[in-house]
Length: 85
Image (tube, rainbow, N blue to C red):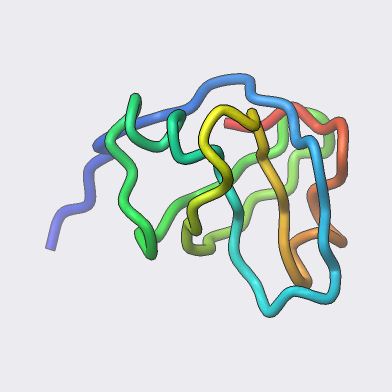
C-alpha cells in the first residue's frame, strides 16, 4: 500500500482545545470543503510550534467559524495558538 497526501492546510492556528472531548480535530466546515477533507478522514497534524506530530480524524466545525480545535488527549500535545500543518 502506498500513502499519498491528498490535501493540506498550511500554517493554520489552533483556535480552541477541548480536553474532555473523546478525540479528533474539529475544522471549520468551509475550510474542509476548500481543501477536500471529509468528516471522519484520518489526518496527520504537525505543530510547527512544538514539533509534535499526531494522527487523528476530522470532525466538522461550524461553517465560517474559522475553528481549528484539538480534542481529547491531542490537546495536551498541540495547544491553542500553535501553528499547524
